[in-house]
Length: 409
Image 1 (tube, rainbow, N blue to C red):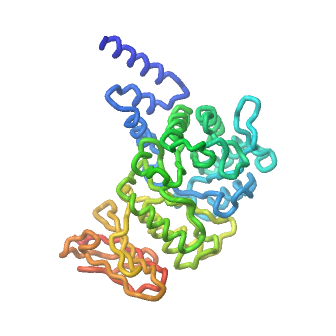
Image 2 (cartoon, rainbow, N blue to C red; image 1 turned 30 degrees about the vertical axis):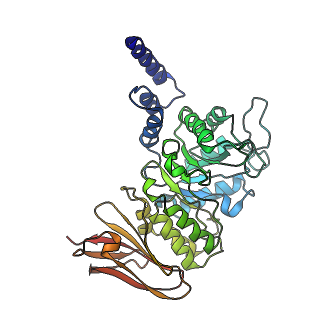
Image 3 (tube, rainbow, N blue to C red; image 1 turned 90 degrees about the vertical axis):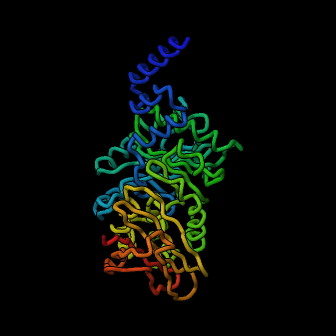
């Protein structure tokens, strides 16, 4: 019986390897009879090379909502390249809700909206790819999407995944509306498996709003998972989402990231210092850096914020450890996290309503008492040499300082 079982497993392994619709990495892992299905999927999500660092790019929703079309996406792709954003790592252009017709075609396939995407998704993907960028798309683990203007993928997972792959899609945001009351733990894995069988490596961004603590289980399902509800372009929303995301820090890592939702920088609802804090905390928290403004028309301040290569480097650090809040006293906070090469990222954040001094002692951020460091200020682009015992700064209300500390010996 054991010999027969081994023979069946070997045959299954060969069939999977020969099947052009199944990526070879997934097929190889499925052939490993010592691994559970969950471990197979998790290994695939890492070995497919997607999400080894948090994804960077642009999403249509925060600025355009349903008012998006192929011209906007093409012009945004052009702007990603001409502005230098692409060279900094912003590679994904992600369509959100409202890109499809409400009804599927006679064969049950999703159809791009003929008024707003008349050239179709394959042509759009080709345009984006020719710019050296990647195209993301949106669907929903329910019967309709959140706008109720296009169908969801519940019950159509394999068909939709194959459609997305045939178009050349690189990223799928998968929302949580009209879900028939079914647990996300049941609805999201079928799309994960469908994407793996689609013949194309597609980043899987799960958006179930943190309902069932996805950080605790989604690492074997997707490449990122929303830990919170939707962000709004204001201080209270941004700070509360940062706090909600913070408690799941230990679950993030290469191949699977906590997602506190897209960036609002540049949309006008916060001050420059609030946006600087927003971008800094998202970077430290290893959140996806998905710009949500109209980058075709961004002002110089927005450009300077989202193109800070030193802050981006913290987000993209290969160690992949999410920084977290380590101290909070009267809205004066210290956030910190380790980086590769024995470095440490630190944010001093003044969330109070008046100017204040924020202090981080070495014991609070995990340094030895005798440690001496060089402190690189990532926003001032200046360095304090031979700093000992603590780092402190006088900080304006709602502003922050961000440093990388490098041991001197």
